[in-house]
Amino acid sequence: MNLKLTQEITQRCHNLTYDSLPETVVDRVQYLLLDYIGVAARGSLSDSSRPIQSVISSLENTQDGAVVIGTNIMATPPYAALANGIASHSLELDDVVNEASLHPAVAIMTAALAAAHIAGCTGKEFIAAVAAGYEVTIKLGIALDPSAHYAQGFHPTGTCGTMGAAITAAKILKLDQKSMQNALGIAGSQAAGSMEFLSDGAFTKRFHPGWAAHSGIIAALLAQNHFTGPGTIIEGKFGFLHSYSPKSDPTKILNNWGKPYEVMKTSIKSHACCRYKQGPIDAILQIMREYDLSDSDIENVTLSILNAGFALVAEPEDIKYNPKSIVDAQFSMPFGAAMAILYGKATLDEYTQPNLHSPAVKKMMTKIRCIKDPDIEKDFPKKWAAVAKIETTTGKQYAANIDYPKGDPENPFSWEELIAKFQNLISPVYPEPRQIQIIEKVRSLDQIRDVIELSKLLAND
Image (cartoon, rainbow, N blue to C red; front, side, top):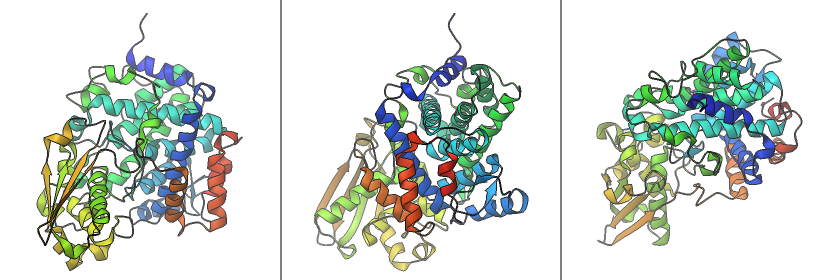
């Protein structure tokens, strides 16, 4: 008898083991974990992390709790996950998947670390659980059709991340296949994430992966205690695919499952902003460096922006050309372009309040024009192409095309480049000896007997 889709998904995830994974997947999980820890630790210092840390300190702080990364706070695992998910998504430097247009680590790694505190798990079990969580999260994002899902007002990191987090937590808690199916069904009633944060730069986008990880753990714990969830949560009439997108395609979930695993298609970010800005910023930087241009040379800049991201980073113009908050700036293509031109980079050091109010930045932003370009849509979402065209004050014109932004699997960070990004991020959080310990522990994750060995290093004590 053919299994229903939800059953088939949970059976595949339940049967996935460390020994069945290629060495490349093991290495990739460790690579993405180090990136996650870096953004989570530095994100613990962000403005949006302080409220949840305050809540936990007053209601949840417990000496034997799970680590709130980058702090001396301990909390029950679901609430540590909430805090870590918020922190890790606050910088817009977390990993991302082109085809699904979502950020998996902030939900999946967050849930895995919290669940490991509950059940204890080896590094090998952790790796298998993360690989399964990424697979579900990303396959669901692809099946929903990212553009259609966004148009419905949903943030796939929050929605799909909840489902993947439930799978990850269920594996670490060692649930049987039926209980894992219940966990996924329960998660379907928690999957959320409204895009309305774009209207005023609210913090709620950062909340989404924290809530996803929190919800995934709650779903797994309830299922462990015989709470039931619908067995057709993915494909049912009122299930995930039908409810969250008018263009969903369930065949895309099992298609090429594990061939390769979706962790292998996951990108990391160079610039501290929305994924749809990465390619255009790379293109600007390429022109500025290749032709030795300075900001005083710039007459105007035209950027081709992918249609799926146009409403995120280029519209409405009154907000994108006048960002009032760091969140606004992270989703403003004109602001990101101005940073690239004025500073030659678009890191955390550039996404600051002083730059929001800088006359030089405001003037440069007026020279930026964003357009839709059918030529860059041909291979989307497999390629997130971008084009930048710069005209100088002397009338010279330059152009650059980017098929794969830096950090894509086709244009990857080396381990050495990733470690440099990691150390740059965490230098205000951990002393150098601790940084080295974390790097070494992550790179030997498959040899760890209890992941809590790593978790203890993530406290800032």
